[in-house]
Image (cartoon, rainbow, N blue to C red; front, side, top):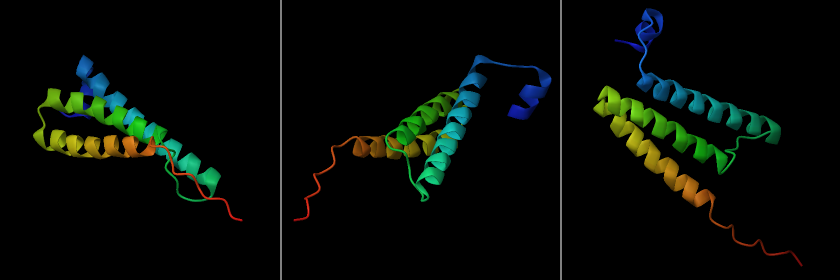
Length: 102
């Protein structure tokens, strides 16, 4: 049964909360990135919050996808999630000191 059919039929399961929450988190991270880019007047990813939201969203969606037994989406989420985790790790590294001009 499609998600739209679930919403219109009134048949609701707790697993649907994970799917909807995951989509909401991804929507938020996109809005946050857009607003940060508008403020900076260039394209930016607000690290590390962008990657934290990305990981949160992918975990929620992964729970939902596992429940749905959707191997294609699970594999895609695992690949994306590993990239998000790496980017979060890199974004939290201390930045090297910038030498001062004399």
